[in-house]
Image (cartoon, rainbow, N blue to C red; front, side, top):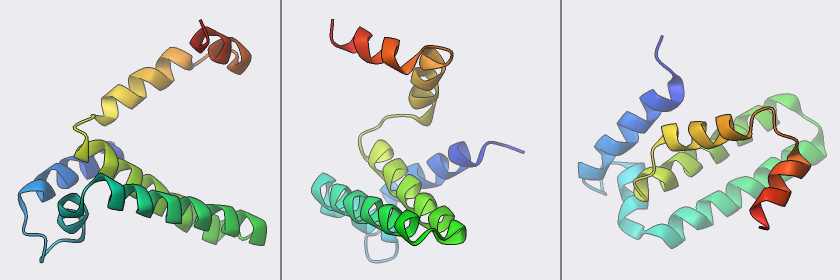
Length: 105
């Protein structure tokens, strides 16, 4: 089966050509970056609250919402999931301390 993030990426790209009145994602695109960022902020807060409540099912649900809205932002900015995967692969096996130090140079 194809990677779910790539499947979702294709659908989110298709929504760019959809009427904002008929698609939630198209309505976010139409409202622009600030609205998408607002949704990411809301979803981030909901993840935090779910973790505070220590409810695994709720954490999963809220992280899925956060990832979804982050993917919307990436498509809005024409950034492919593959670019994120490449960056994560670059960091794989690298100490977090080393990676952070490499950014400050």
